[in-house]
Image 1 (spheres, helix red, strand yellow):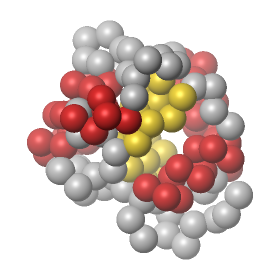
Image 2 (cartoon, helix red, strand yellow):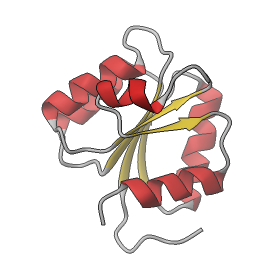
Image 3 (cartoon, one colour):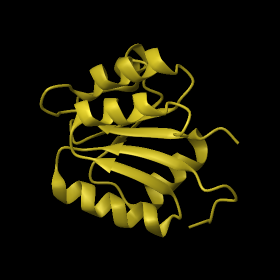
Image 4 (tube, one colour):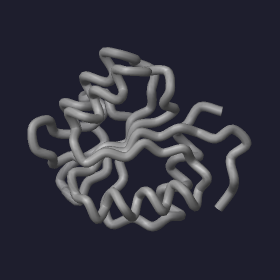
Length: 126
């Protein structure tokens, strides 16, 4: 997996603590600066504090309080050009759905480090 020239900053949101821990290790291995939270409302707060800090947001879909689609809409209202990837185990969510939510891409769980790295390489503006 390639090292990035600039250390990209990712906001990762998943209410599953195990997924969050694995993501932390993965982003470290990919040499990404990751801010990880298990609460979508906390993610909104973090993003709102410094909307320009993040090069990418990766959010789970099914979460308490605020689901991934709602989180994406609120984040896009703060900064409409930040790429957002929806991470989900729900195979009934399709690209046509997520685009209307302001989400740029979709990755189905479980995914490999190579899959997420490839997606990140494609989605972050060069």
